[in-house]
Image (tube, rainbow, N blue to C red; front, side):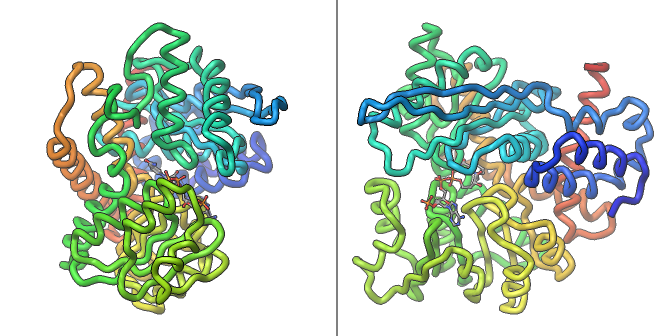
Length: 448
Ligand code: NDP
């Protein structure tokens, strides 16, 4: 597994200190394994205990969130914020509201975010947060009550130059609006303390579309460079049907591909004629319904219970955009057997480590999450710039900047991987390119 005593020791200590934190240890293992060649060449990292400090969050806050539901009953949830690393800028990263949220998930997302934000080339450190609150099935008033209670605790830890949260699973425009309103009420300040805000109160054009669009810009550049190919005429499978999946589907279609399948946590739909995205948007964005309702409007399509089967569908390009560990080795084998050209990750850590390694071994164009889905946080960074300047850029301006950032992230990842001897090992390319900047900043700032 590890080639150096130093990295092995750091991982083993992490295992001892964080037993049962499966997702966190999985993310740390992937990162530590792949940055070994860099660590070997830089003995100053061990001397200054940079890895030990890099894997340990600067701050981890857990708090109680009590709120009142529509029946008048008190509900209690658990809230989290990890402020992982601020060496290159204020902590930045989304909030996830989902029943599965726990310390392990928040820490895995936070650690990934540190390297992702570094890759964007913008001055942003890494953080993440959330709660085990489930917005599904809750009324608007309940969601508002929860968000207000959540922010009543979180506000003391964040700030426009300290820590700037955004959305993630279960946190979209509605939730960000309620959270921002409560922050403003408590602090009496209109500042860019959250991103993903509504357009009428400081949000950036193209932020909603950014992660999905950015994923496609990254994939297009990767296909062009590594396979002399493009989205044009390709069959695409997108998992999920949330914010990332919807705009990935939209951009892939605009670039000339046909998206034939999408999913939610209950199952997936297959439409050989190409998914009609306006129907998905209506079901998911307006009605907050289930994906199987697609069949009510497109009876020729098919619905399959259970989301996992989606990777058995033959496709040229796979874009996992739902959640962590949704694509395992068995799925990776099916995709490769069916001739997949590219697998680029819209979700965070959707492929297990075995699946990611299988793609790399089989020379599939692989876009690891921290590189391929960095368009969301990059555009959040652009929202922060606009808020600081009290200016709004046009959609085209933001979209152009996003495109340039995604091309630069791909090229940085690809060149770093090539310099290591395997241009297909984008996992190592992304981890090393992201880590180098963070480690250099940590070394320069002295022990903290
Ligand atoms: P949303 O809440 O908007 O959507 C999540 C989607 O994934 C929903 O369709 C949900 O279905 C589905 N889903 C959840 N769990 C599963 C599962 N086990 N199997 C299949 N589908 C599932 O979240 P986002 O689109 O914002 O986030 C999706 C992923 O992208 C996450 O990993 C997130 O961390 C990552 N990401 C998001 C960014 C952003 O800007 N929003 C930025 C970078 C990464 P259901 O409706 O049934 O719950």
